[in-house]
Image (cartoon, rainbow over all chains, first blue to last red):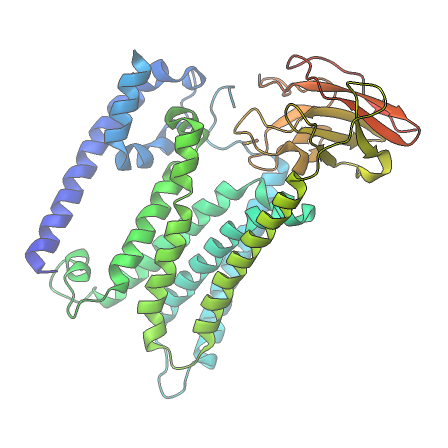
Length: 69
Length: 343
Ligand code: FES
């Protein structure tokens, strides 16, 4: 691929990751306790979820909405 | 499990498993770095960074092969079951090995280019198909490692989580293509090709063998006992101490009959976690231990030990002569049934 395409692709990946970080942090602080009772009062495991939240954030938003109903 | 989440649910067995795994990987990489230069073609000596890249790449490939082999191996031979209990840690380690390989590649091949190394990797000419194959596999490994905590299982639902984690097979295919289009093209001796082919062939053979054995076993339905609704579950000696046999009644679910300290107990064969085959598990620390992810249940009432809350249906047993009889009607989950002493 051309250099420009590679740069665009990486910029898109960076933007996706940045959105993921924002959604992930918000979910860990505001959403997690509401969607999963086993997470209440448990904090040490939360940083472990961040990589997954970063990668799967669109899916996380959707499940969060479904489970919060 | 339904108790409060912890970062890692360590047990002594898991600590030992991880220690052995880490030691094995460290030994492999160190040996590779030391022996690699002596085994390489003297006409094309290997430099340090290339060796490091190959050491991590081959370690990741072997770990991935092992991760995929464990499932069928445990179904074929019960002695391999302990390997299955902590497979998620093996997956995370595989991902770390693959990331180390990728970091070594970026550090060496693209470190001196004026363009940022990732841009250089993606736009390198001529087009090298092994790069997208490798990146695809790495992305899958990262995704699976990142979603290995129990939280993801309940958040995504077990069927969706399981489907996601089946993509490990796709990752394996991508890795084989990555090696085939990359290192194999440059290899001067057939050793690498042989290792890759043998690993892939071994995986296929193991899966076929485990599938055939299960198909054969599924065909065996327990015969009725002289007194309905009891069915014959075979001789008590056929049940190994600390293990189980799985009985399939004509109607209803398969039942696992365990033998522990000379006493027999029966529970449903389906684990309350993700329907793992409990009858292929073992008794560990006095509890039935699921071969898939290690959930545990007490023998006498099918309840997970506190603080966990999962419960299994239990079944009545009886011994007539040397023969075990099973009442195939399940008790409500968590019902206490006194274990039957083997006569
Ligand atoms: S522990 Fe996961 S299926 Fe049994």
